[in-house]
Each structure stands twice: as structure tokens, then as C-alpha cells.
Length: 482
Image (cartoon, rainbow, N blue to C red; front, side, top):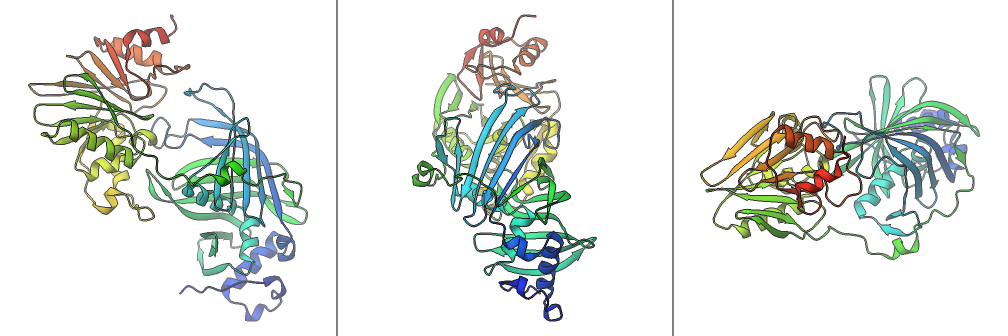
């Protein structure tokens, strides 16, 4: 049975051990293990600095691959615990072929109460959605000193003390965040990890966990030297910290006024612009990610369900407007990357059969069965099983009016799960990410051109799922002569 209570002035009651509840005892033990409740309550600002690694989660070679990482340098997380403010500055450098090249990129972002924001190199700030603010407020408390300090306050609710192997778990709910689960080493009572729940557009209900290692003493308090964060089974970040700064100068980390004054962004409006590429073939563009609609004799095929549920629902509605007399029955999903498969569940909810590279099939089956209770989507509201067909190397889909050839883009440094679609009658190639016309960096173009030539495809035009339709010559020119 869960018991909740305020733990106000717990430091003054630690001596009365005999009358303490299990919840009070757990918080008193962890406070003592970290250096004492008085010292913890005296912390008003905290600065963490260091370096580490970020993983390219959801964008790697396969859904569970971990080879693509960013090196993080100049990491600084400044926190004002009184005002619930946090600002992070870091420089990340990709250790893999990347769209923007492999130069370092400096990022600055933060949260101030209900305002989340990002700042560019010139200091201009934009406001982020409310969901981002909630996630960053939770991140603020994913540190032992910050969460235990909050648990010692009068508004915290603590309950459900239990044992799990060599750990003791306790749930903590705060007025502006939570609930959190704090895990303590059963022997030392030091925090081993903090967990909280969130929503992910592709993964649905997820658990964010930060693990702590290598405690060291700083001004009488025990603080971890390493933080490792994961989203469910996916590791997302690992940071090695230098000596933290307690109650030092943190500078002005309030949300910039331009961000605070801006309206909280809502869902982006969906704009689907249809461009006829050939009789019965349309590019459905209008935003950063495109789809292609292909008409067969008795049905319609959609290539790609990207970006979001809303985008995919809009694209499917536009497809049915263009050809109202035929059912939309197939979705060709070019690869698993989160930005290109975010509409997968929407397509399943509307009964489409998914055709994708074989290596995606297991993940797609998992994706449509994951719970989405925190922010229910179309599939959560109207559950359906997935109908999915895997393509190992090649497959032809044709009838008396149309032929579409699907090929795996083998050896791509972007993903192992890429499919391209070739329409031989139209001499049209549809591909995602392998070549983005108009870009200044083409890290995957050489592989795509090699595949086109190896398959002996007679391509006149490329319909990319980023950028404008381009002649094959643009791809050839983007590949340096060997």
C-alpha cells in the first residue's frame, strides 16, 4: 500500500528513528549517505561540467545498433534549484558520416519553469513545445542532490518503499515534476539510478533512466562522477564529470525574454503539396519530409510515412483526394529511422500493409504493440494488428498498369535497412536520405550511385524524400570522380 506525506524539516526529525515511517527512513538514509540533510538543503546552485558520448538513438544503422555516436566536449549544465532553471551548453562532434558534415556543433538549450528554449550561436532564442519543457524539468531532477533535496522539501510526496535485489526503491512525486523512482544501494544507501516516465512519438510510453557511478566528495557531499542515461533499452548519453561546483556563480540562466514572451508552440500545421511526376505518380511534399503516391490498377501505394502521425494522416488524406476511387492499401517504408517511420502506427491504424526491408520487420512489429497511454495516438484509440512484408534484397510489385521495383541499398553508411523504389516505365528513382539534392554535403551519394549502376537501373530523375526532384546528373556530379 502506498503512503504519501510531506517530509518538511526532515533534518530536524532524523533523531526520532523509532517513530519514522519506512519512507522517512529511506530519505533519511540517503541524505546521510550523501553528506547530511543540512548540507543538501543548503545547495542552491549546481554546475556540472565534463565530456562524454551521445548515441544516435533511432537513427543508427539498425534500430538496436550503437556504433554511431557523437563526442561531447565543453559540457556544462548549470542549475538553479530554487527557481527550477537549467541551461546546458555542449559541443558535439559526429563520429560517423553526417548530413551536416563532421564538424563540431555547439548547442545551447534550457528550461525555466514551464519555458523550454534553444539558443543559436548569435544568442537568439526560440521557445520549445510544452512536452519538451516537461522532459527537461524531469531531467533537472535526474541527479541525486537535486532529487533528494526536493524530497526533503515540504511539498514532496514519498511512498512505495520496496526492495529489488540489491537495491531499495522509493517513489517521489513533486508539485512540478514526477513521479520519480529513486533506487538506492541497499548497503551504502547511495543513489544508483533515477527513473521517470515520458512519451516518445515513435516508442510511446518510455522510461528515462539515469545511472550514477564513481561517487566523490565535494564540499562534504557525495556526488557521482559519471551519469549514464537511457530511454528504455536504448542508451542515449554517457557523461564523465569533472569536479562539480556547489553554490558557485552560474550566470544568468533565465529563459531569454524572446522565448518567454513567445507562445508555446503547438503541433505544426500539415501542408501537403502534390506534384505530378508522371501519370498516376505524385510527389507529396510541402514540408521537410516527402512521400510518393503510386497508382495501380486497383489500389494505391504510398512510399514513406514520415515525420509524425499528423503528417502521415494528412498525406494519406491527400492521396485519397487525388485518386478517390481506389483504396490506399500499401505503405513502402524506406527505413527505420525515427524521422522516416514516425507515421508507421498511423498507417497501421488505417489498415495499410507495410512493406519494408527485412531487418526492420521485428522492430516494426514491436513498435505497433508498444503502449501509448500517456499521449494516445490513432492506433492506441483504434488498435489493429500490423500486416508487414519484408524485402531482403529485391521485390517487384506490379499489375497491368504499373511496375515498382524495390531494392535494398546495400552497403550504405547511413542505414542497413534502406529500400529504394524504381519505376522503370517512368525511369524514376525514389529514395530517402541517400541523396538530398541542394545540400552542400553528400556523404551517402557515392553508395547510391554505385547501387544504381550495379542494378543497371536506367534512371532519368530522382524523387528524393528530402529536397526537390532532380536529374540523375545531379547525383553523378555530387560524387567525386575516382
